[in-house]
Image 1 (tube, rainbow, N blue to C red):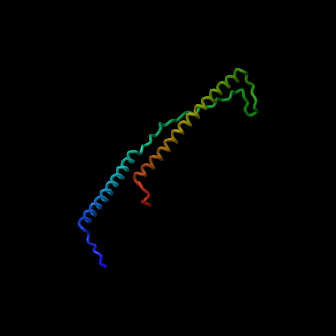
Image 2 (cartoon, rainbow, N blue to C red):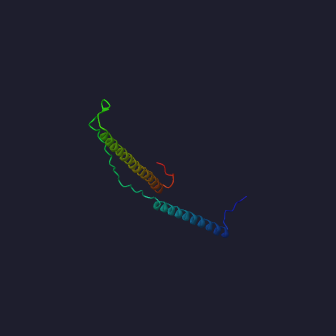
Image 3 (cartoon, rainbow, N blue to C red):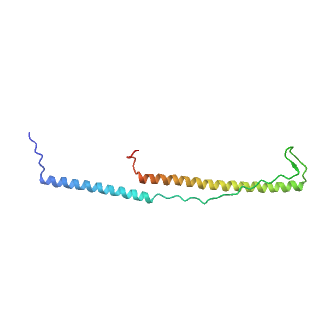
Length: 135
């Protein structure tokens, strides 16, 4: 049995059309991937660094001179004790506000860190869109 591999003219046109269709499809797919990469590049939001905050820690009020801290005794009158209690209460409120301000700033810094990691991952994905290249 002899096989004739001669392609008829109508088959030749069909094969040529098929090759052209495949080539066009590959080019379009490559173009779409390039456009996807370009859209990813513009979609990488650069994080904004929060404004620097340096809250001042309040100073603890000094003990009145009439208090002997080593012995745990005092010879203060009520007016001095009441004034110290008032000053100490103000200090505690100021310290609580200070801690809250520091915690808010830390939360802003943590959010910035998360956004920076997201940005870095996005940029990595633009540079290396697939895991086909291994180093």
